[in-house]
Length: 356
Ligand SMILES: Nc1ncnc2c1ncn2[C@@H]1O[C@H](COP(=O)(O)OP(=O)(O)OP(=O)(O)O)[C@@H](O)[C@H]1O
Picture 1 (cartoon, protein in one colour):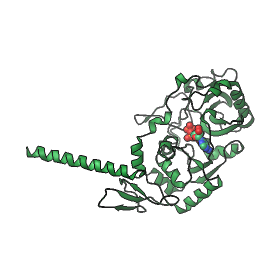
Picture 2 (cartoon, rainbow, N blue to C red):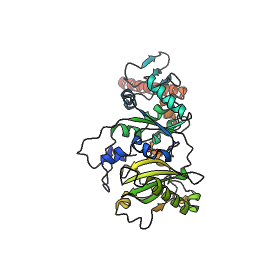
Picture 3 (cartoon, rainbow, N blue to C red):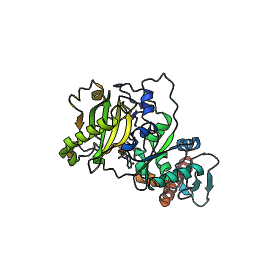
């Protein structure tokens, strides 16, 4: 699930009126039990309040180290709680910070990761931290420990959106927000080839549109197998999805594997909070005109249209990543020294000016 912000405000164009209940129904723990047989094996753990507080505290990026490295070098701009152990050393302008620890939760997470084969894809109730994969060492959302998960979650706007304003774009703003029980979703890691992913739009229980998910790239096999892909998705929808979900309007994502088998990947609300990819919400809501006979199928047809990845705008320069994660301690020291010498230079200049 994703929200579009423009100058700090939500961009609502008002093509469709999504209700809070639709958002509630698209939580992972609601749809997973219904479609368990057709999706990737996953485990759901309730998120304790102190973990939620830690994720929302933007004072530090340092991650709990009890299941990983125990300490990391870091710039200190945090007034975090007493569990932090902060040591300043005089000779270098660096701090050593130990993040809060959650032993019980850590043990449960590790047990779940092991049960899923040691490598997982993490999510909250709705979103994965797709906007933060650049910060991970392998530039991937693959996690082996709770500290891997924390690093991604604490760096992700999509995760913050889930935690703070999941009902922001709903039309029934006058009704009270439903209670959300936050959950950590761990999914068995699967090597999904982006060219096999498609987003499907369902209106009044009818599959009206299918879009290539990774629309910034051209995939020749989609062009060649257009009919087979469309047919396989339609069959999957009518056999396993249609009339089985709690709403009649929704969006679902699928993966077609190399054997042609279709898998459910995710379920999203039918509304502007969900990216409409190669369609517009205006088209999708205007009386089903796009789907006269069967669903409309859109994919990128030539290399000319290839665009940069939509998540690129969330990235920051690698140097800053190294600084913020303490990955390259020397870079951090250089940076601090540079700041110090710049400060000294400007103080000298001020003194000279004052003397004149
Ligand atoms: N189990 C998995 N293993 C590896 N990669 C995965 C797994 N599940 C999903 N992915 C990849 O991550 C992408 C995002 O997954 P998902 O749809 O669950 O996240 P999301 O935050 O809900 O995204 P959106 O907001 O677009 O619906 C998928 O398109 C897929 O490429």
